[in-house]
Image 1 (cartoon, rainbow, N blue to C red):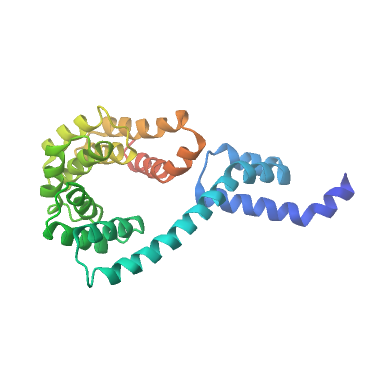
Image 2 (image 1 turned 180 degrees about the vertical axis):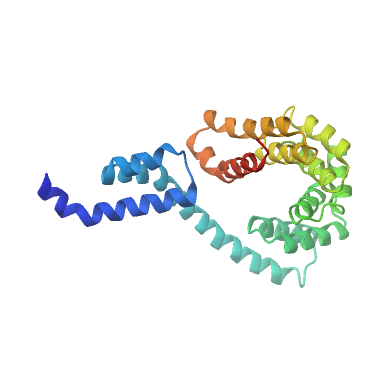
Length: 246
């Protein structure tokens, strides 16, 4: 056993280092750090197989999609110079959003709307871009238009974003009423955390803590792939709770 350990010693350390690095970056359940540290290379191998391997598969798919998406963006950027059809700008805006390029996405949806788009989707996405960029006031008319026509748009995210826009512009009564309406049917993490933030801003710490904990409690019933996708929200909720007064 001692000889075997000495042979695999450097590789065991490498496995543990890789596992710890992944743990720090991805922040899965806390018990994994004890598995890595106390079970040594075997624990690291188990961790990498259970937690890191699915991430690598996901990242591989995302990289392939990202390459295809960026190629299509370049095509559309050339196309809209000669063909200003509304659909081209809508597709370009969607792709920009997927890439996280919110100012460009917002501008593309603006052109689609000014070009006579007949659907509420570009209004919703232009408003969403504005809110996510911290420019809440001009987002309100767009999101109000969407919610008036279809309150459940994008699984009630439109309601949640409009409520957040109200909160950011000081319309706290309207914000709370709409947050409560949205959370009757939606369990979206973004909406829960934005509602908690509103409550905290009003000094309603116990209620704010309750909504942040509701967000964290969701992960117990989630399949592993959803927990991985929601990890950024879980981390934000934990940081939010740590900032609240005891």
